[in-house]
Image (tube, rainbow, N blue to C red; front, side, top):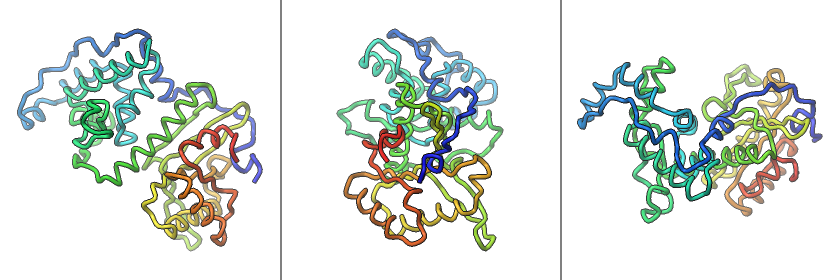
Length: 318
């Protein structure tokens, strides 16, 4: 498949967009942070029921006014991706401090303060064990953060608060791993990250051959650019928990979606489907499966590990 079929192969007419990656790079350059200033939020009651009653519109407005741009971007990212580790957040939003240790220290301070305000909260389960301290926390939107987001969206439906399963959490964090890689490549000037979407905004409903409604569900979508070329991507994160026949059915659905022509009518191109797998053993199995499955165009797909993904995105690996 030619580059024009893989990406767009055409000169980009993109407008200058403000991505979350650029927004998070406006962090201060010394060991202080605007988040260290006191907040204007009203005192929070100890009782969960009393706390919920106190979080009315005026209190939420005061809380929102006390959040820095960086903190609001952290909340937005957690809302998009559901779960993020301390390391993910530090890599994305604490990049311009004088040293890695300073960035780590300020990141932990900001996250713990947001946790105290219930804007975010960490799971009981940790990554890396208890000895890793707060660096091992996995974060999600907290009670106050959920109310802020629902108020902004005019949505009255609260998010569920239950603990995720091990498999679901592993899958969600692997999706963030891919996004963090893209954001890092953009920050380093290797690519431009024009846009990205996570689930469920990344999903694509379409009509099947018989007129039935179908949905193809990429874990993540992105549009990147290198030089004069713009490339579109569908990312599927494979953690080795699904059977190979299930993987084959997903590939066949992408093929049906391509034949529907809907994506091409919308964006002018059909994205490459990139399977990001755990290791080289799984990579070999999925590659063999794609080549052996009837009615699949192997050029539509790439199968890679996270360590090799940067080369695929930058066009160094076919």
